[in-house]
Image (cartoon, rainbow, N blue to C red; front, side, top):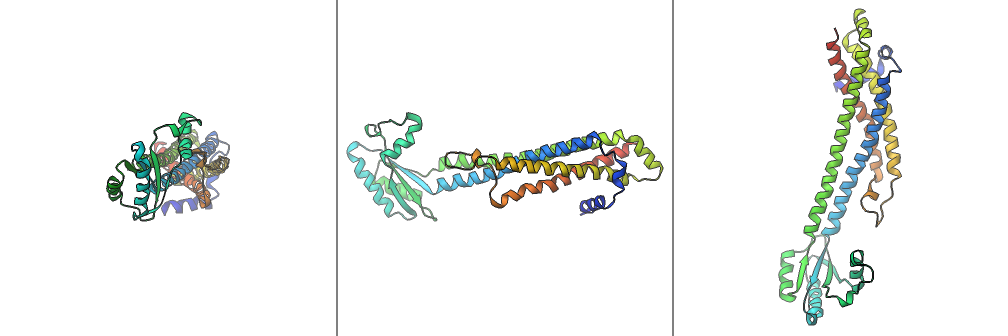
Length: 299
């Protein structure tokens, strides 16, 4: 609350901005730094949100399906395949099941062996895909039934594939959060250095202001106001540029992969706008802390 009241004071006192040079290089550097950091923060935010969606999509897609692989002697393949399909029809939690055709297996193997792979001449196992209901099925019980009805059938519930994929997406989301934190810290450091340089360059002006009765809080307020306003201007420019760049990213499609999903959906497009007040808060705190520290060192 104290920070908010101080910001209102900055906006309401027009005198404080008159004692800071308007065309100082550090002010322009603050605008550039804020714009660059806000631009990068938009992409960090997009990465975080896209990683979350990716983790949910991978988890949901793999969690709702399972595969049964049937490897049996040539004379028993058809019988065991039919036995598996019959078992699945009476298994609670299984919504549907289907036999994957030779054409589909050829399409699955084409990226590795080419489109002309003679699937019918190879001893490939038969594959049955099943889809779960919302409640799911008992994998252990299903394995026991398959062992009795079709000894060559092996259930793969995709758990070993789903877990590392979801973990990878979660780590990417964490990377996005850490990137945003580092961007904020770097922005605070750059603004603090700029404010320190401006205060040091105006040491004689500060001494004169003290001689005529100005308090350190008034002097600090002048620099805080100038750098906070420059940070807001830069963050607004960088945020708009970042939103525009994200909007130009390719849209999500079936073959696009992860990067085509890097963006915002629906109301998520409003989230980057929060970077502007965040940049203002960072600039305010960094400049205020730097100003009070430097002013205590100027005698």
